[in-house]
Structure formats: C-alpha cells, structure tokens
Length: 343
Image 1 (cartoon, rainbow, N blue to C red):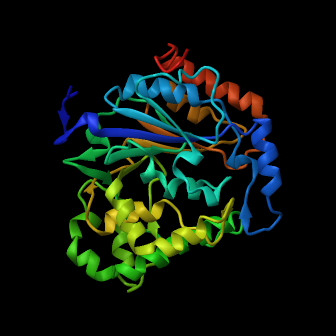
Image 2 (image 1 turned 90 degrees about the vertical axis):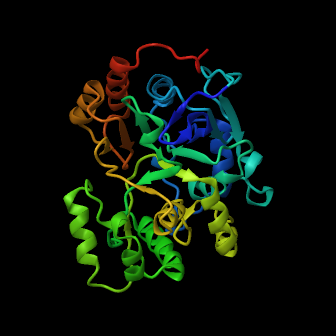
Image 3 (image 1 turned 135 degrees about the horizontal axis):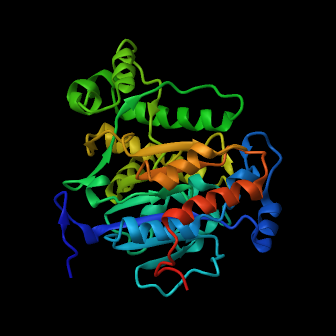
C-alpha cells in the first residue's frame, strides 16, 4: 500500500538510518580495550561513545513527527536497549557484521560504519542518516529531506580550520576536500550551477562566503550543516566506484584516524554534481554543544523552536547525571508518551 506522495516521491520509499553504541556495555568495552591505541593520531575519547540516554526520545520523535518513514535501520555493535521492541515491523536491526566486510571487524570508527551504509540489506534508494545526537523536535514532512526525488541540502564554501583542540577533524575535512578537488573544478562548478551556490533564501552569511571564495581558484573546504544527512544510495555507489582504493585503505582504521575520509565526502559529492535540491537548511535546525549550563537548549526543546536539533557532546566536563536529567525532563515535556517502538 502506498502511503502517499509528497515532493514528487512516494513517501514509503524513504528510510531512516541511525548508528548507536552503548558505551557502558562491558563486553564492548573489553573488546575496545584490546584494540585501542595511545597514538595521538587516533580519536577514541569517551565522548565518542558516551550515551546520554536520549535514544528513546529519538524513536518517539520519529513516530510523532515523521510517521511516514518506511523503515528504521538501527546500526549496533550488538547491544540493544532493553526497552526496544526488536520485532517492530518497521525496525531493522543491523549489526556491524551484517554489512561491514569481515576483515575490518571489530570496528569502533564511525567513519567506517558510515561509508558502508549503502550496503545495508533492504535499504531504500532515498534515506536519511542520523547520528544518535540528532533529534526530531517538530513535525517534518518528506519534502523536508527530499524534494522531487532529490536530497535537500545547502552548498556553501568554508575554509578548513586548523583546530589544535581537535586536530583529527581538521585532517578529515581536508582529506575530503582533496578527493573532491580531483573531480571538480571550483570556478567551473559555480558557473555550471550558480543557483546552487547563490540560492534565494540561503542565510546571508553563506552568500558572502561563496562570493568571497570566488577570489581563490582552488577549494579550501566546504560548509555542511551538522544535521540529518539526506542521501541517495547511488551517490555511495558512484563514489565507491571512483575511490574504492582509498575507502578500502581507511577501512582498516579501527578508530577514527587522521587519514580517514568522512561521510561528508558523499554529501558534498551529491551537491557538486548538482544532484540535490538547494534549500536553507538552517531555518528549522539548531546545533548545540553541551555544557554545564544548557538552559537555552532545554528551552528550545520544550518550546519546539526548531524541527531538528543536534546535541553535541563536546567533551563536556560538568555533572554528567545532572545534565542528562535536564535533557530528559525537557524531552518528556514534548514526548511523554511511550511509542510503538517501545515494549
């Protein structure tokens, strides 16, 4: 049965994908400890795996605010929340061994988990990928993510920043940019797709960035909204065909490393090929870094000021339990009812 049509595509054809890890699982921690390196080139901090226990609200948000989703593909090392109904007809439990080549397991590197997502059995051609810190807090229709079959996104330049507080990420953004520069000429791409760079409705700041960057002939980096990723499976297949050697090589990195490529590579590829719908992605989205004081974030949740928020664990050193309780109370204000994904 068709669920309907919105933005020119059948809404039943859109899946959600989410990755999750229980950083307190003792079996997982023992396995991680066997492989973790002390190298400064590896990013394996606790914040990469810490669980703020918001997953229940992610599922409640999906059911309340995006009930049209065909299926949720839930990627896990193997552990599962006790409250999750694993027999739910719209839930697909995906373990790492189900789609990652055996020679690269076990893996604790989110970059590796993400570049193979297109191999998930039964995944729809159009899908939206969520980190587990990206939450729906307002009603979204399918055309929030896809319009006339194309992913909704925003194309903007932004230089890669040399950030000594997080040097691995600086390397990753540059790695992506170097790959893209092999296949796309900056000025030619702007001439070919001017409306994707200077779209009426983009935030003025990104008009300015794009205009300023035209003074420089080579790519210096890209700005990407750190929110849910709207993807076409075909994008992954195209990039893998061209960069298989590099992607296989980085797959051996069990932890996030400075020579990785990131999923943003696939997202920027979609944009540079013109295979997306240009849209202001900032309008209904807000990004927050957790801190010891999160009143603005908690108020945003309660008032449902935005449709999507990202709650980033930026090595917060405050009272973990108190901060977690504040977030939980805020989400209970808008999502108090148990959903069908819960037992």
